[in-house]
Length: 268
Image (cartoon, rainbow, N blue to C red; front, side, top):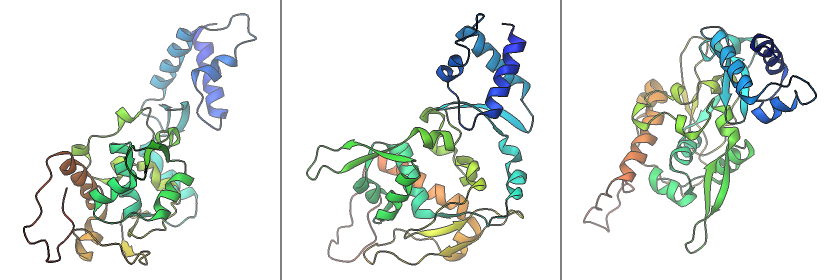
């Protein structure tokens, strides 16, 4: 089979498929053909197809589950206007928890709380699990055997990643949109104990508002004023988490000598 013909067939398959197609599934569609293409030929055709779509409104993207045709992320803001939905709302606590799981997995709930300085709502873990973005990888061999969480293949697919190696470096994250531009296309379920951040609307503006406090025993870590949050929510959101991750990886700071006096949670 000629590469050009194979490329057209693969293009039609991927445009029709409702989920990513891996090589095994693609090759299975040619099993009954006498001139069944080789794996190398299919990879060559897929690469040629990717090149053809460079700089266009649609792109061929390889994610964890396989290949898929999708809207170019540069065009996503305009495509999203086809649906009359309010801008999605993202909880600061939920996103910080997801970032920590993605970068520090496997990680326990207690370790997340230690880094963030506040307790993690059960609803956050439940929401992330229901969306199939995180799963239990095992249990830590310590008293109580707490669950250790990690991300899933669905997480990689949703965030346009082939593997965790494609996650942006912590030092490179200066804007929330760089971490998950696709989130602007889907309504997020925001129900936990953190500050909620509205995704950018069509004018590019962002706003913040307070959710009701879920747990009375949740003690806030170093807080930023509401005015600063409203003005810099996307930057501060990731910066707060990434700074916590980087600092936690180094030596722990010693606690204040006065143990009896109330103080903010120790920074890691």
